[in-house]
Length: 117
Length: 200
Length: 104
Image (cartoon, rainbow over all chains, first blue to last red; front, top):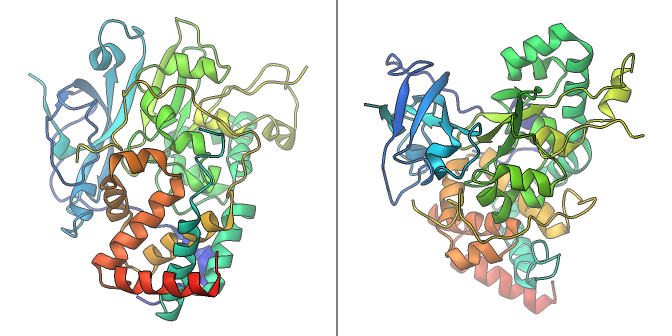
């Protein structure tokens, strides 16, 4: 691709480059579902932080389909997946010393989660 | 570590960037005019005054507020704020029961169209490490005291959705114009590390 | 990867240092690497995900000790070399030329 010319800069910035992408499979999860974040430790790119892995949360919302960062970072294509907003209680993440009402919300691509037992 | 250690580079990066830019321009990959234009866009034209307008409009217009909370990207676009690092927006409402605060623990993701570029503290290790595990302590350092019966929600922007906090409208602002209301909305209030206040 | 960038929940980082009236850019080098990285993305050289992963692969101590935009320089150099667009050798040669000319 050629250089972005000066007179196209503002329009390019205002258009952006959404990572939204069509997913052909039905979503595995829906709001209210109890899930557990998988314990994956790839040496490659992932957006599943260590502090969430193996922890139990509740799906809040399906944001829709997005290109998968884990594959896009390595030239393996968009491979879109559903991305869910998942709520993790602070005490689940950090133990009983955490504030009882607090929570972390994080966005998880479908491959990052499994149904909780 | 002096206070500039996070911003003053060793001299080498300065030279390397000059070298890189000259090569990229020579190879036709970067237009020098575009370099100046994009710098100016983010230094002068895009910034948190955009987000403040969104917040003020939501405070003044309940129907807009409803649209904003239902579909952040669409409602923010009504005011003309769109694009890079804000294509997919979710707006988080602070209420008497819930206080929201946003972070990107893994890097520095931040909603550029409404808030411009993030401050250094948001991108540096201490905030990213601490706010998910001890949000109340972090908020207290910012001068925000959250009552024990209020729920603190920390939003980690690890994917491509970008988050912005809609703070509560302060008391004593009845009948204020949107412009005046926007003046109350700080950048930190839209991250969740400040609360808008009417100055005494 | 389980890199240094994955900071959520780590302890021992101390106070959050804030600069009063912080400018958008502190210096020209910040302005220019901001521009270069964004414009090379726009020119289709790489995705933001590749940039993030490049930064994640910085040596941990370097990641923590360098200013933010030095991370962007690292990614630009790394990825442009990997793609054969601007090799390390080419860049070093140009750096040497500019240094000789007295550029700073």
